[in-house]
Image (tube, rainbow, N blue to C red; front, top):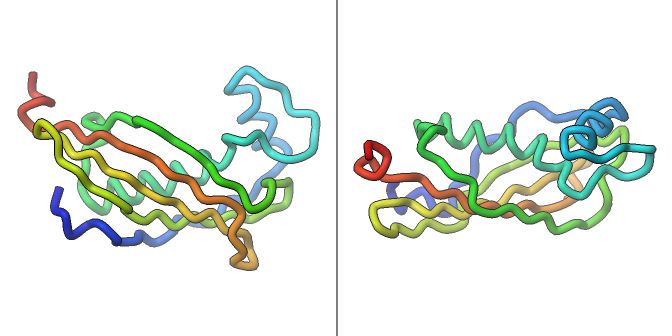
Length: 134
């Protein structure tokens, strides 16, 4: 990966509407139940994943060579039913270690008014060609 990618932001995918059904499905997928109220704390990964896939497609990165290393969310307010969330992913850092790219991303999750709801940070390991072929 070229270092010039650092600082580049990728267009957000279509906004994601937070519904009770989406929250219940997400909670069930992580072995929890949803009884109303704010979204589970890791729920923003749902719209953030679409932004991540847009980044990978734009950079022609093969998902089979990517390992998700870390994910964190820092909240301005809880995610609630009725939110219409948009996610803009920015490449924050790039390091190359042992032929692999270690990519740090920041995803700004905003509501329909453009207000920041939370910020997600992720670390991805993109395996080098030689490593991937072993």
